[in-house]
Image (cartoon, rainbow, N blue to C red):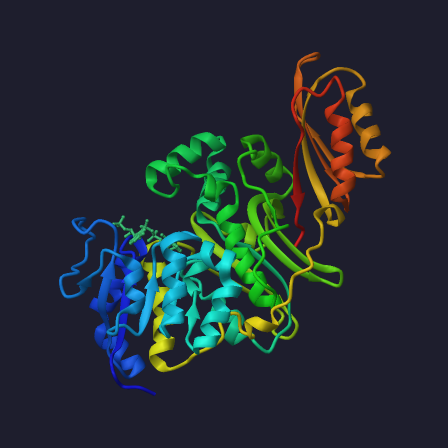
Length: 431
Ligand SMILES: NC(=O)c1ccc[n+]([C@@H]2O[C@H](COP(=O)([O-])OP(=O)(O)OC[C@H]3O[C@@H](n4cnc5c(N)ncnc54)[C@H](OP(=O)(O)O)[C@@H]3O)[C@@H](O)[C@H]2O)c1
């Protein structure tokens, strides 16, 4: 193992980049003691040189062109913290790996879109491509899958991988307030971006799930064909009804290895209140892993934020400093299989359905007929008292059935003259 200093270049000194600089500056002695060598920064890059980033960068070479970091001779590890699946981030990572430099990144979009190709380059150059911080921020979930549980076959992974959505759903649950109102508050508090679509439409969680699934099942990261649905349609009514039925609503990221293929889906779901995942609140993330030998394992922690994410970035840097190298996806990129995804139509679940109807005689009979026509048996029914001839909200849950049948029943229900708004359907995840 080398005792020479490990020299970092950091591309992107934003939230996470400044956190990484701060750890390197304030914990130098601890890092030396734990790795047996100094970890130093030699060069940095960001767009605006004049911006105050809350950390001193005076001792480092400044590069206006981040991609030039790939060719510097005073750099062993390029730490990419700019973000984005294409552009500067992709070019810098590709060129750094080709130039024989290790790369550490927090960029889930880049790994979800180009993970296999970058992994092949890293292998060919015999360097590390590490991305612990790309999934679930400070939770060391990638290390757990690649190292601690590496003797196991993975069966199923269920995660809460987006803190913004979890915060919004938890506050809606605590206060009874509606989605738009809580989203506006999350934006004011800095928990949601000005354009929140990446988070609330499930895209961010789908990038992270794609990476976990690829690691666990040794497949090429694949976003195509993944079911991705966000939380925009969840109303205060749903949170309340879920509570009455003994559930909580969470944005789940789920991947399951089935004999017929892999399930890969991000969507809101009702979960029993006593389930560990259902009890994760606010901006926290959690992952529940089901394995062949270690049984199930649950891990919860901060999924984002400067310090938690920088902690994960530095865990990868420390591995490199110690000379612990490992293949990015645990197995050679050449051996990653093309995942055969199970279509959602074949997905078995119980379902929650919210309907807005004209509260007239015979409505209930019409609704139950639509379900019966598609061989769906109704498990429970809630209607809060309304005045005759006014609109009412009806909540139904079904016994286990297939998604195709529920979708077909909802097409018929939507066409009924007594139904005044598009039905809202949410899957029920019992465990
Ligand atoms: N924030 C989190 O909690 C978190 C958690 C997990 C993963 N991540 C991932 O970590 C990465 C960084 O996120 P962040 O929140 O730190 O982002 P950020 O605060 O927006 O910082 C991005 C940094 O990259 C720089 N940058 C952008 N494009 C550049 C270019 N073409 N050339 C040079 N510099 C460029 C920016 O420069 P200027 O400052 O000059 O504009 C800024 O310093 C992303 O991949 C993100 O998905 C973030």
